[in-house]
Image (cartoon, rainbow, N blue to C red; front, top):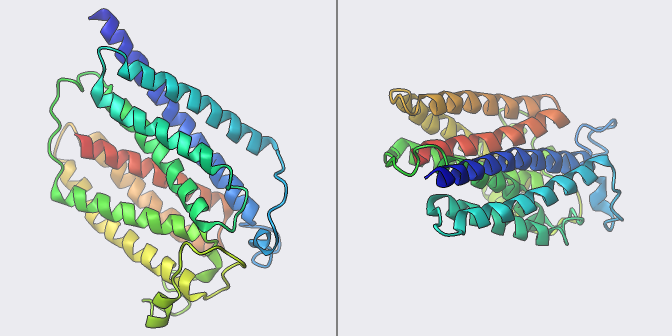
Length: 307
């Protein structure tokens, strides 16, 4: 029993470390992508996404890129050790599932690195953004599954509001990732409207081609990019209302109060960061903070969904 307890504590500690490292990967990846795109550059917006105008050049291995690769490599080794700890007999299946998914996701992201140097490949950029967020969520799910008493407790069924809120959050995150991967920041530089528009028109829907290979930066008022922005904002509003209501409901449950408070704080912060990012003229660090808050919000929702 003592050795089993030690093993569970080792799995939890490894998963916690992986969660921290995954957040670092998200932060460093966001910085490399957004800074490389010229977000917040000196002669904004003329300097934005100049890298799309030519063939991708040779990568410059500065401190941030080297740190990103070092953290990703350490995370991969730790994930291998984590999966082995979870699956060796007797296996700890509640933790083994998300640990295996975490390792598989890391391997997929490693393979995507072959094409990641070309910013024109929207699909690759999108998968990298979503994959980074997935690393945080799967790492945290292993932490939850290896928590003291988790093997004995039977999680309560999530409420309908929580399920709908989680779905709305997922859609919002996907739309946000598409905006980032397609370099569509300039397509909608006003808030809360989009250059006077409040809903995409028929032509705007037709121009929506989120996974096309980029040949130039989407211009201000680009119909496809503006459509993504508007959908992202309406989805964020739905997430705020539905997931916020689920968080308020969860406050009544003593076991869920801590996660519910965190959910409400992160929801408020995420909406504020998204709004300020646009109003500030797309500040680099506000955009990065918006990305990190999304990762933390997904992990918090995973906590509430499990309990």
